[in-house]
Structures are given as C-alpha cells and as structure tokens.
Length: 583
Figure 1: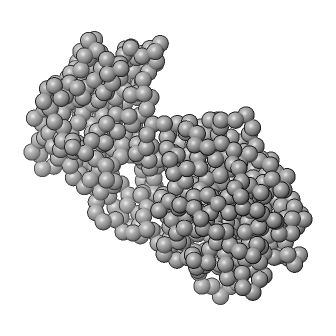
Figure 2: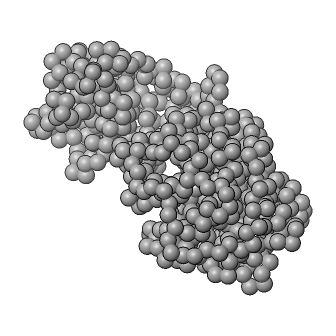
Figure 3: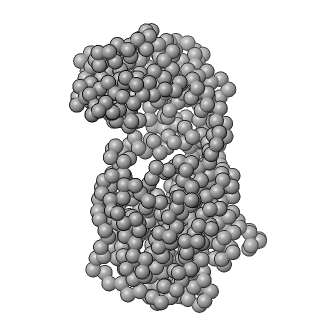
C-alpha cells in the first residue's frame, strides 16, 4: 500500500469519530488509585532482583536494530515483517525461552518453531474508471497503465456508482461563519441522495494562509484544516447518501495539482499491499463508504458544463453560496484484485513450575508489525520505533528476566506466553486469529493479558508536568483485582511511574480501549491492561525513530509490567473477573 492509500485506513477511523477524539485532548480520569483488594507480593526480593535485569541500555540495543531500515517498515505480509518475525524467534531461542508456535518442524533449533502462520486475503486497488454520459468506454482512468491525471481516488468505492451531479459549493455548513452551502441546497430544493456531490476543496481564501470567512484573525477554519469535516456531513446523513464525492482539488491557494499528485500516486502503487482481512472479500467494494475522488478543475468544468474556476471566483467575491444540479450522468467502476497471502505471529513460552497452576496462562503481548514503506527521495521507511517497536522489545526484555529467574530455580508457578502479533495495523488481525481461530493455549485458562503498545514517547497533550507516566487502560473494566495488583506493583518496587487513567473508560472519545490487541482478549472477558504513553506528531510517520525514545522511562514502565506479571503468575488465585466488561 503506498503512502496515500496506507494513510486512508487511519483517516477513515478519524472520519468515524468526533473531531475531539482525533485531537486526544479529553481527559477521562486522573492518577490511578487502588481499590480495597490487598496485595501481598510473592517473593518481593526476587521480583526486585530480576526486574533490574531490564535496563534502558538493553532496550535501546534491541530497538535501534529492530526499528532500523533493515526491516523495511515491517508491513504485514511484506518481507520486512517476515524478517522481523525471524529476529524475534532468534532472540527467544538465544535467551532459552521455549517455542510455542504451530509450525511442525523436525529441527528444534529452527526459528519456525516459534511461528504461528495465519492466512490473510488481500484486496488491492487496481484502477478506477470514470464514465461520462452514456459512453460505454471509460473517458478517464486512474491506476493501472493508463492514468491520465484528471482524477485520483482518495478512498472508498463500491464496485460501481452512478448518478447525476450536484454542485455544492465548498460543502461548508457553518452558520457561525455566516456561510452555509447546505442551507442553500435546501432552499434550492436540491436533494443529493444517490447523486454525485461536487465541492471545492478548502474554503474561500485570499492566500494560502488567510480565510475570507470571518474567522478569528483570518486563520483558516476547520473546514480546511480538518480534512474530513466536510465528508462527515455527507456520510453521516442516513436520509441522503451521495453516490460519491468529487473534490475539486487544484483551485485552492494552498497549491498542488491533481495531475501531478495522481501521476505520483499511480507510479508508487505497484508494490503496495492492499486491504487485508481474515476472511475472503465478499465483493468488489474497497470499503462501505461512497467513492471519494479528487478531480482536476478541467475535468470538473467538463462535467458541469461551465467554468468551475469562474464559479469559485463568484463565490469568493460575494461570500455567498452557489449551488446547482447538472444533468451530466457520471459512473465510476473500481477494479480490485484479490489474492491469498500469509503472515505470522511469534509465540514463546515459559512453562509454569506448579503442577496445577502451570495449566493457567499469563499472556504478555505486543504487535511487531508497522506500516511499511513509501516511494520517497529521502527517507520513505516507516520504522515504527514507538509503534510498536517499544512494546515489542519490552516483551523481549521481560521474557529474558523470567527466563533468568527460571534458570536460577525461581520459575513462575503459572505458565507465561510471550505473544508478538502481526496485522495490528490492518485491524488487529493477528490477535484476532490467535483468540478466534487458533488459541495456542486455552482462552478459559488464560488469566490475564498485559498488552504493550507505544510506551516510548511523550504525549504532547499529557495533562501533567510529570513525564514519568504511563496510561493504563481497561484493567478495571474486567478485573478490579488486576488493576490493584498493577498499582501495588508500581508502589512496591520503586519505579513509581505515574499510572494515569486519562483514557481508561468506554466513554473515551479516542476509544483507545479497543484500538490495540488487548481488545481480542477483553472481548473474551479475560482481564487485561493496555500500557500506552500516547500518540505524538510522528505517529505513523517516517520520523518515528529510535533516537526519539525515552529509554530510562521505558525501563521503569517495563519494571511495573514485569512485577505485575510476576504477581499474577505466582499468587494462589487468578485475578477475579468483577468488572462490567465491554462486550
């Protein structure tokens, strides 16, 4: 998947949640406080001894390699992801942690013994064809070998969409700014249900940074800076759903031509990985959203039968909406290719020492995949140091600490599964395969999941000055006892990072409680904690590099997770399921 299509997965998610969620500014709770559950730690001196083997230097040693260009961005099913799986397997082998994969091999030293392969179905965009009027042959093509530069796909697309065209001005509905294209459509009696809606990008502007609308200081409004605000208005109306959206993309003072962007996007698409799913696609649709196309002003003028640049100039001069309907019939067809591919989870295992409790399991998880590469003149590799290299190397270090304890005769009473999954960036696919299709250990005997995803950076919106923090999400949704164990671990073993419940709620508009692999354990009512330090400006960007990681704090967070896992693995009873859950 190239950079444009790759970003659409995330942007579609942003489209579905309120604008505040994308900003990550809403605070649900404050510093975590324990409940009434007493926690007496099993062998606290041993906990202190072995958690000290987890160091900032060891974490950095792993991460500088794991998040290097060598692994090519670790995109699911790509070569880099498969090399990363081999690396993780080799590390577990080196530290003496047994394999628990599903591959049958005659060679017990083979890294394949740690792998859990799973099939995936890739649906990749091939081309979009645009038919005008009654023509039977496409008048314009994007993708394949015939991109003409007149349009490009932004996202979405049923197999075929057809309808007349409604021109909706800028697609802005904002009475506070004194400008409302939707009111103009209603007053004109124009219904866009089942029709193509054409709108101008951005808003009336005097230059690339200054709005003509009555904004504060002339700053650009969210109708320009919030890229998908316009689309929410059309996609959120169940009574009127357009056949598709045409965004006139090259008349804005912010610059750029559709032709140049289309050619660059098409040129970079050849090696892309498409949408992935655990089940075969049921049709030709790329998504359940209407097609959204960015079209050139020349093509827009042809479709409308009038000069769209002149229409824009008239709107800008009067700041008065201009809407109308064209009789031109427009039809698009999106062509996809589908093929079966595969990916791998990595599963390692320390068997418990108690003859009874060894048949219960603590799962410590991370996802090791990321979002791959894009064509670029300079750095085009998304190395994912924080997302989720930070969680993955932390799992390695925790595994090594437990392995050393076992080698010294202090192995955990319960068994521990170290699970590094793939496909998280494509929709939690690897963890879904593990829980829904092929659990390596029984789910009803899995007593806890501790999931680690992005614990290496500072969230710029963190509400406190204390940067020694970690967000804990989900624990008391299923088990207050697990929540309390985690807090006592932090208090007892000296790390004393700030355990913050900012996002620990089903009401969190960001919905972080269901946006990583713990979700697939929590939906089975397995107690879990999601450890997370927040997003940042480099999230899913090429600058998420290992030199930006806070290694000392990351080690402190790892100490808390290790101590929590130790307690759960060694106490007499499993953490009680007492919470409301989130099914």
